[in-house]
Image (cartoon, rainbow, N blue to C red; front, side, top):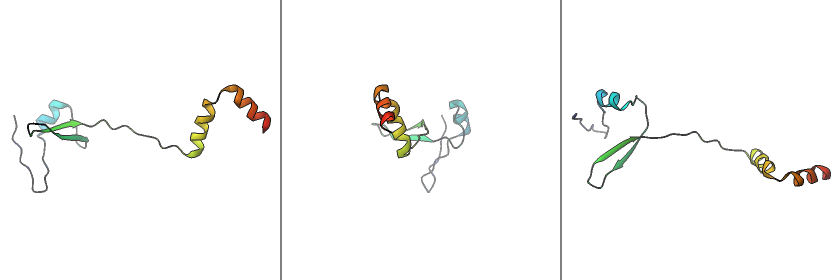
Length: 78
């Protein structure tokens, strides 16, 4: 067990031995939670990239979902 000190701005440095044991590297984002008994729980955060689609791309997706017969009818009209 290691002892750490809370800094003036509320920051805590996690000892290097603990980081190594957990396989956590610097700059890793952590989720902070408070347990019912007043403990502080830190867990690595799962960060996943998201893609924001343009209106044109959404229209392409919707067109791909349209049944084939409807697509053929639209092409004939065009």
